[in-house]
Image (tube, rainbow, N blue to C red; front, side, top):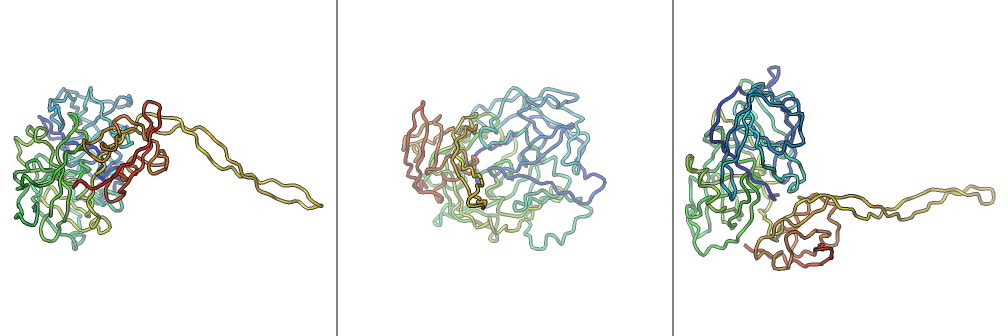
Length: 444
């Protein structure tokens, strides 16, 4: 589900490079991915070093981050560059550009002369926020010369050579025109805020697989959002230049046309300060992220400027949710815990000339190092805030269960309104264990 991490990075200066190609003139190549907190994470080899990277159609070039521990990664022809990023600071971010790099995906999709950007002097807390040490982003440059299928069910990207693509694969798909600007795809959509307000057409959204949320809109006036429409202040995550905040609300309807449309959709309205410098040269109305995209099987064709969609029924009819409790978590090092386990031993003894087998069970207690999970952010006036929880509290239990048994995204699913209406949390604050009841009543 939508949890954290929303990144959009627009370099001030971009230069075209040799394109990605399928190795040995293959007709098709499958690249598996992991879906982690609604983000597509793939393995990418750069100059012989394997990295975990987010497949992000919101960026053009390959962008690397968090490389301190990768001493083996070497670059050629390095120059200084600056980026603009989403976030509170909105200042230029220093980076290095490097030419003549070999970038490959399982030696199936290869670019032998790739341009790579390396963000320097800034550490991004992906590992703390999603449990995976993300090394960067790869997007438009990777897919622009192929027809690419995104399969959220089987979790792979499939790259097709245009010459060999079988159009019969699209028999049950609906096509939509897209606009390609700077190797980034944009699509027109519509929004209807409420039954009493007419719908707004031709809202131009960036198709952004690097955004784990569903919908962000930059201008609520263009949506015809009335002043009395209920909204709450919300925290959206981290951008290149810092935290992103704004408002969240629920709208009556969103869609591409009458075939594919959704009701009761939560949307984000990030404060305009984060996006003015990004939309100045290329005006667009918002972002379309994975919480919408994961509801479809998708084919992307940048060359012919079209996207094909087909329902992925298991996801398509899921309710739209958001972190109603207002509680956000992060990893913060390791901590020892006492783990109780049952040990079973089988012994034998002789009785009246017969050997009898009997079983003995006993509990043993062992220390084990587990991830420490802390509250990294609390939305003001949220159920968690009203319950008295604080940023920095160490989370120990949710509804009586030890948190170390779960991944971070599994824990945060408890905070969605439709999943749990009351939460019992045990935390540690300054060495003292405290219990809290969070009445997770819907705020929208």
